[in-house]
Image 1 (cartoon, rainbow, N blue to C red):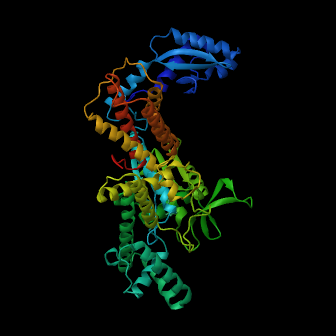
Image 2 (cartoon, rainbow, N blue to C red):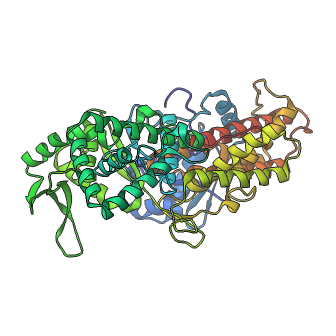
Length: 589
Ligand code: ARG
């Protein structure tokens, strides 16, 4: 247990049931108590079914023995045990134990949440947009999911190292640089562009024009090729130009990160170019170990685990025929660097699921090279795609990819309309600020709340709805609790009276509040932020039920104070939860 940690009720029940099993059936000591939330009581233990098999008796007998032992114990939160069905134990906790949880969590600056990721050096590779290309909806998920994981893992104690693997290197830049030199009047610097056009969209267009010229004009194609060589050889003017393009693109990315409230900073960028000087050494190491081998003039790694449709092993391209290095080589370098230099215990690549094979092969090669060892967890944290209303990859009507900024503008517009419908006493300035928080929050929540690996349909109207499992619903639930607390003028620490009997709706709410820390720990293990979304949604619903059934402000003391404490803990838990999703939790809406 770390400082400020409060063991959850389910954790306490697990200890109690495990202890009862140890005493009732010493030959099965240490068995999993299989405790879950229950519809018939606070919790249930399903252990008897599995244990009966091992003890060669009937589940009912095991359940009876364990429940006897539980009843005999004095140091458990369990007030009542009943055996139901073939051998389930239904467990009801004392009211005191629930109120004590509320008091303990309120007293903790971190709501009693433990630090199960303490000290783990965790590299999170996310976002990774491509220089001179508009960030599009495809980069939305990696950026948003990565940001939430960074926040959750950091909160759980991990030493998080953010890595933005920018696509900032490659032969395409030679062509672009040549084109810019040929067209000195082209505008693309952020300070000369008109409002609404970003450097990257300007560069994106120029790059398309360069491609067209490359195909149509042999003289330009020749100059462009020479320029690629110059860039690779480190020619001063060419490199300066490339740096300018990278810096301008990063400026545009930063605008998006800032608007999304994403934690990425310029110092988190170690893009493809960063690895460039390491590549020859990585290749040497793989070649001397016999892992990279010649094939058709190129250097490749044949997989020992994966074969393609033709039955042959699939390959990683380590060095192309022309001597060039590509995406595969760079990612071999990322993993070596992260293990050796960043001292990573855990390396997460938050990248589109279509790159699954790529990462499988990278990890395999890294294991064979001895870079990845058993103590290091490397994972491709794969995510699905964002789809348009037609269920196909999201495109504009003209078939272009959808620009992220335009998408966000649209969501904020719709959120403004939805809020203006509801709240009448907001100033224009407040409305603008809250609409921004709600619109951005809505987009992020929609992305985070669908299971990461699944695709989802981008549907702005649904996202900004005040009903259902949406970001706006959660933000609104939070503002309602804040408004109750404002009316109660309860800023002082609240003294909970643990001897009061619990109303069923209070009970249900406390059980939800108490599960926050365990939910976060689970997100840390599974890397699935949608579990946190689901939990917060259940919490908001439990609060609504509580508030309908239990008057707060008009209740008589000491009940009133206890209920205010529940409001405080609910507001803080929802606020903290939204923060870990990277979503603002305004106090009014
Ligand atoms: N730039 C790549 C893309 O847009 C994503 C980079 C992901 N990270 C990595 N280490 N490969 O698809």
